[in-house]
View 1 (cartoon, rainbow, N blue to C red):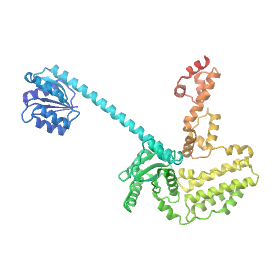
View 2 (cartoon, rainbow, N blue to C red; view 1 turned 135 degrees about the horizontal axis):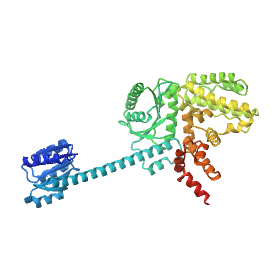
View 3 (cartoon, rainbow, N blue to C red; view 1 turned 45 degrees about the vertical axis):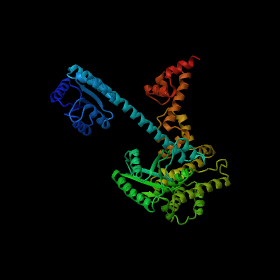
View 4 (cartoon, helix red, strand yellow; view 1 turned 120 degrees about the vertical axis):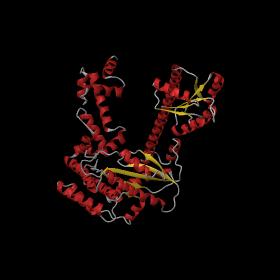
Amino acid sequence: MTLLIVEDEDIIRKGLIVTLRKLEMDFEHIYEAGDGEEGLRLCREYTPDIIMTDIKMPLMDGLTFIRESQKLLPEGQFIILSGYSDFEYARTALKYGVKDYLLKPSTKNEIKEVLTRVVEQLKEQQSLRLELTERIHTYEKKLDRFQELLLGTILSGRYPAGQIGRYLSHYSIVFPEEYMEVLCIRITSAVSSGEPSIDYKNHFMWIASLFTPYYTVYQADILSVYKCLLINFSRMEPGYSQKIWKKAETEIREYGQKHGLRICLSISRAEVSEEALPDLYQEACMLLHCRLFQPEAVIFDPKCQRAAEPKIPAVPLTMIETLYHYYIGNSQFDLRQNFYSFIHHITHIEDSSPGYVCECLDRLEEFFAVQSAKDGLEPDTAYRIAFSVSESMTVCSSLEDLTDMLYARLLDYWKLKKEGTASAAHMASSPVDQAIAYMEQNYYLDLDLSMISDLISMNSSYFSSLFKKKTGLNLINYLQNVRIEKSKQLLLNSNQKLYEISEAVGIPNVKYFCKLFKDYTGVTPSEFRKHEHSF
């Protein structure tokens, strides 16, 4: 906190400074001025928190000085220095926002009392202002977060067609410019092994900052490996947007090399209708899948995609028929060899693309289902293979990773088929259902996301997103719910002690168990047992 003393009499001004130092008032700096004009100059230069000023001074009187300095320091606290003859004059100064006054001469105690009072008032104002600023900041963060979630929901296609504009309007989200595009971003470590933790948030914010000088940029929160931005812009001169993207590509490449990251970004076509947002997102996702085919590229846009797809290759039906032959056979080696050959063919053929790969695998799934039914192999399920190829492309970092993941899924179905009808029902259930069933039966074990995703042969990141999308909870929170429900049964139907129940449901730390139980139920385990037994 800083103080300015404006007083034309040197002896009074110097005396005040000496007194303040003896009083050990907590001022970081004390400035002094001999008249109002010098005082204004110091106000501009140092912005003091408290100003003590005389009334009668040469060049500029105290009241004029106060009026002018208030324009510079609207939050400044003023104290009038006044003699007895000017007392009434000083009192009128209070209407100018003067907080207090001191009569000359003043005792040490009077000076300390007035200054302490003003300092406390100033601290209270600063505290209130800080609280208000924090509240505004918190509100803005919550509003931004809500907008991210809403836009994420819209982009992922979970709002009815024709209703998107109404929802945006209802929540006061307005795109000021005419055109919209969707950007998908994927950030991974360039290190193949021993991957370090990645500060996704800051990297993502840096990427967003590349476009904020040219576009209105909105973040969208989608449960995906891909991060998502929505950019809103007006008409640009021909070629101008290409210059922006060229510059962004160079900066992203350099940034990635500096931080040991592999950063890829795709941009959808431009549209004017808000209703097109889900389609734009799907297009941007499919474009970003192209990184598997062009590992050195950084930015993918619709023009690149069209240039890469002058024609659509034919689906290799003969290879699909051959693969089915090995699928119904007993040789895992032959199945693997032919599947890898099939994937290599459809990913390396001239003019291959993510869309083409998806189409080929869709045809493979369809052929296997139809042919299995014709062959009488479990007609109820027909061994319906679900590669979820687009989602697999999202989580994989290379074509090799993609091939391995798809083969792992095919092998799971092949093994289940060999086991017979007992496994058919299991095969028909979703990965999330399988995980839930496993947790319901094995809740007492030391389970985590990595273990369960391994059990169902899925990438942990993708499975986590899939699980939350279906249940509304992440896997660990869901598991805790299961454990709490099991503990309720034990509390009601047994005389086991709390630590015994805690261990029985897979939470060995009884203190943590009690805290978790209260967080979920609102009461402690003991209160729950006592209350339920009283009825």
